[in-house]
Length: 169
Image (cartoon, rainbow, N blue to C red):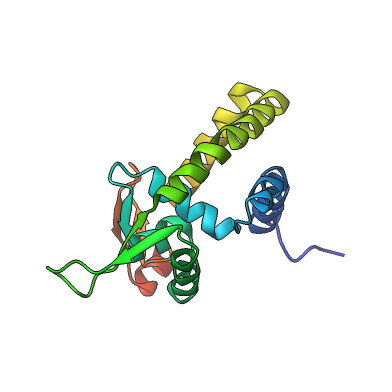
């Protein structure tokens, strides 16, 4: 009997790796009554010098579909984790910022998350973890993105070619 596929299911392996990895962090998030999506948003905003982003940027960076993001942001605002505002100069935009409550959560959760990464580094080894980051960065840069763009060899976005052009390539 021949197998219908020549390659292992990379997408499934990445999902399994994600679930295994998140098992290290979920107990921490649960202790603070945060969902994974909320933590991704908080951590992403915290990484910004201004601690703010437009909602569309958050959706892209946190891999959350816009319709889902709307509900998550509403709950986060209700819980005092973020503020949403529309700039006077452009009412079409929705800017999201962290609140002092979220900054306090980052201060409390951050060291515990870092401790889990330290444990991961001890289990894998520093070089293996660094190589994992490098391989994933290359994978992300090499493949077309969901937003219709793909990266060039340097990882910079470029417009995706038409389906016909991709088929011929």
